[in-house]
Length: 349
Image (cartoon, rainbow, N blue to C red; front, side, top):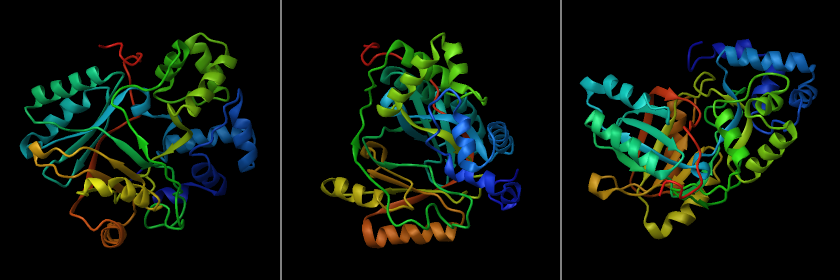
């Protein structure tokens, strides 16, 4: 299926649309979760399961199951390199080789390759970054998240919106300070479950029972653990993860801003409330690498002109500061967060 075209829309009917826009989160934590999903969209359990499978096969869904929250579970950071044009593919291949690299995008900027490294500990994360720097010969710009103002890639796509949540007036925001070390109090069962589901749930009528069998635990204990992991923020949401590129949202821009430190929290919360801002967070400046920016925002859209208009609005009404626009030009890798193992905070020294 081609990216960024209207072709996908002809492949979904009203029931599919209800699944795509209605079940990006809130998937039931129950032995037969598709019974509730089916009742909501007006089909039987088997039909609901088959439709989710078909939407996945068509590329409209890119995964099914939990969306993990790496900064809570372990240690995660955004990073970038200046990959030489004549070695771009070579550098990308080295970076993508690591299972712990779960996102990698080409962007139209001097720092032209942006990726996320997620690991069970800060020590392992930093070791991977050091290896990448040594193997590629490229200095790595390391930008861990310091404050999460707003992060939510859940938004309706079965529509004609030019940018994410075009029809909404405001979103809820709560600023959260992020540690570079795991903050979650995980039981042994929690760890086994998170490792088992990091690539998604099995797409069956009884996904939790299947997970329980895989981790050798009673299904009731697995359900309790998943509920607790949701409540603690280790799992951000459970549902069908939409492929925004395939559904036409391919004019996506990361905008970086140089805010006075004293204005950062107030402005971050204010901007995070704007529905078209899908990501808003504080990352450190790196003056030694000529990186002065401390606030990151992301806008997803179908039309670059519409996205640029919203960025102009941000700059004119909310963030009257120096900024740069880094449009993504190619998806080099995109998976869920991956862990080799999960450890208690401090286990690695």
